[in-house]
Image (cartoon, rainbow, N blue to C red; front, side):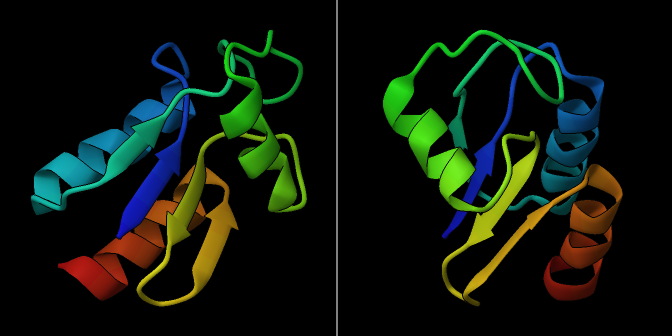
Length: 86
C-alpha cells in the first residue's frame, strides 16, 4: 500500500499526486499540516507524528509498505514511482 503525506496547497505534493494519477496507482493520502516544506501549522497530530518518524518534518513523504520504502523529495518520489509502478 502506498501512503502519501502531503498538503493540498503544496506544489511539490501536487507533482507527486499528478504522477500517481497518471499511473493509475491507488494510495492513501494524509494531510498532517498546512502547506510549507517545513513549519506549516500541524492539523493532525497523529499523522504528523508518523511523518516525522521518517526522520524529517518535510512533505511530500511517501511510504510504500509493500516494498519497505520511505522517501521524501518530490523528484525522487516521481522517479521511484516511474521505476516501480509504470
